[in-house]
Image: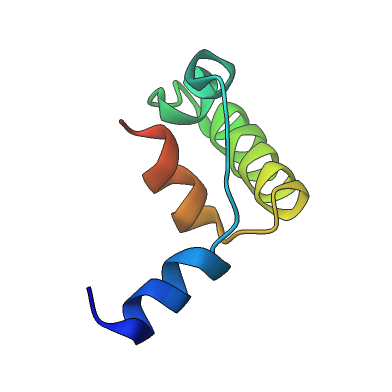
Length: 62
C-alpha cells in the first residue's frame, strides 16, 4: 500500500454505531412534518458525530 494511503487510513477516526439506532433516518417520510423532523435529526446526529449528513447516511445504509 502506498505510504500516503496508509497515512490517510491511520488518520481517519474509528466510528462504531448500532445501525438500528438510525432506522428512522432511512425510512421514507409519510408527510412534510416527518420529512422536516428527519432532516433535523440527521443534521443533529451528523454534528454530534463530526461528519457531514451525507457521510452519516452512507455509513448507516449498509
